[in-house]
Length: 430
Image 1 (tube, rainbow, N blue to C red):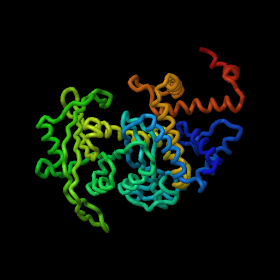
Image 2: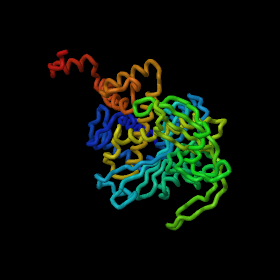
Image 3: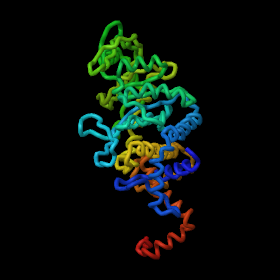
């Protein structure tokens, strides 16, 4: 982007440092000499400018992530992969929406790769974004649309592309159990990538026999292999987490759809670590169980840490919520093409990154600012969690326009207070 477009990009990020309303035609504009309509038109021109490419727009996000990792001096980082549907059924103007499953299921499919701290689970920045449209796969990897493929087939190219991001530490790719696929495991391992996936109850070779993962878990329990590793929150209460680990071999052929038919694809036996994480209440009742498969070495992370890494996978769900119902209301945006939506998603993502940076900063000044923003947001916070990203975003929505008003219009606080008291005297009582 040229310097003028970069300046508009910065203004748009600032405008997205707020919660959106479902009825808004565009992002909120900050007070400035221009009329609001002119600011909105400038935003729409930016979002529909072919010179603004997705690879250029993702650059600041990746740089912010690299800076955060260098500052933390982390031995590893988590890259969480996931996807979600963007439902625009109410928007007939978006003619490049795509059929996702059945005939009436149309919209866009957003695929994200979110970088998360392996030390405390803090979200750092989205590193890659794909938006599936009728015109192809709009990607931060290249300016032209990619060939449309199933979202599982997007993972390996993203893993390979991450080698060019110049990250200061190794990446561990964390994916939910939809990615539990022998063929994909073999491909990722052969390419030298580290992964952590929640597995379904599949057949493996263990203890010199073939058995289900659930059978392995049961025998580990009977052999007293589980150890308590930490206390965890469970639906507002306290629970205890136990873990056990062993090695299993994926020996069966992979299954792949070829010309509409499932075929078995033989492959090399793959030895992986199985980490079983269980959560129990104080009465000994099993609340949850995860069966995790990974090729991360024991030297890099023990079983307890692996279980914690997978726990942080939910951060990408929170990111999607921040884009959707908890902040930016993406499914009510009025842009008329997938490319305009994809550009605006990256702008909103940079606003998310700035909020996350504030959320994890614990200096006295940052904590004071967070308290002010929570008060301005009007949100009710739990004592155990004094701030959240949606609340900080809502607080900034109230604070930033006032700061810009004071800057642009030469008002001061006393003069604004006098205006309110003189015009609306009722507000002066109390």
